Amino acid sequence: MIALGGCIGTGLFVASGSAISQAGPLGALTAYFFMGMMVYFLMTSLGEMATNMPISGSFAAYSAKYVDPALGFAMGWNYWFNWAITVAVDISTAALVMAFWLPNIPQWIWSAIALVIILSINAMSVRAFGETEFWMSLIKVVTIIIFLGVGCLTIFGIMGGHFIGLRNFSIKQAPFVGGFPAILSVFVVAGFSFQGTELVGITAGESQDPQHSVPKAINEVFWRIILFYILTIFVIAAIIPYTSHSLLGSSTTDIAISPFTLVFQRAGLAAAASIMNAVILTSVISSANSGMYASTRMLYSLSNSGYAPKRFGKTAANGIPYYALIATTVVSLLTFISSIAGPKIYMWLVAASGLTGFIAWFGIAISHYRFRRAFVKQGHDLKELKYHAKLFPFGPILCLILCILVIVGQNPSAFMHFDWTQILVTYISVPLVLVLYFGYKLKKHTKIIPLEKVDISPSHEEEDLSKLNDN
Image (cartoon, rainbow, N blue to C red; front, side, top):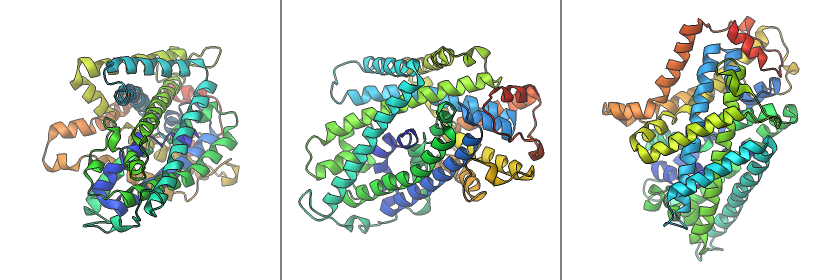
């Protein structure tokens, strides 16, 4: 449920409308399909490494162990920074969503309440986090199932009063609008929608039986992604023409024009806006909750790997790394305060975290590519692996290519017009990661580990990474 719920959020409930308006019905479907394929290969890559070495905050650990300790350092701090800021963005969004019902109450109050709730859940136990995420994911899944049912009935005229069919797939420039550049721009939207699926790798370290539960989650999530995302985009595109101004205006600040709300209203459901507002609030809280968990465990892993102060690696009796949790909360709180006191600072912080998810995916793909090559080069048989990714090396290579394509395609118009401010705002996370990587490399004189020396042995001990770092 965490693997599934992590990739179902405001990206699907809200941004899917703008994807259809930009690239048309089949353009949007094409982008989401290929991005879904990439995410599946990414998950299988992560699954192979996570079952071989289940560890909290896994991305940094794999990058350090299979590629270069400097890459582990850069990936770890990159991912921690990303989620710590995302928590602040999500609690701000939660306040905007609450304003739909109670517009006269100051928004900072709702943000404060959301942060206290998220902190409490993460401070109790990992079971509390897992249970909360299970139920919030279930709400999202049930909403999509109901949406698909209502949508299909509306397309065939059983609800809403008249038959729609597929005529919206052929109006004006449909089904493809804007050609390849438009599909590329939707790749970016789809990429953000799918971010969060990699959380299953972080939870592997605290799973009761990761060798069985992680592969099961990964194998099932592919079909669910295809089912939910592809069918959802299809239903929205069939009912609402891509020319609709409502799709262009889709945002969390106006729930009334969420494509889900529009489809429910077409079916004659009067309370659609309130229902979708409640679901979107659940999604935002779920995202913040996952972000707090992911960033806390990443900081914990960084500490145990020797990349962060040792204090952050200490845990309480219930297994929660409290110092890492407090540090993450402080960063989230300061980021949130900056949204009120210094909007420009807040804008730069959010921009700096914008591409970090794709950079993390890049790190996962290159780590798996190196892991498998080292595994074979050292004379091991694939049967030794508890789970092995399919279609290697096609999977990680596709992920690497698409990640680079999405990162470069974030804002091509800024390069075309030589708008350096926009270039810096959009791509600032790339030089930040490079500074982390080369800075650590110069300080510690690390090198890319030769394939024959890569440690591919199964491990549960994070101390291995600390030794690697010292060497």
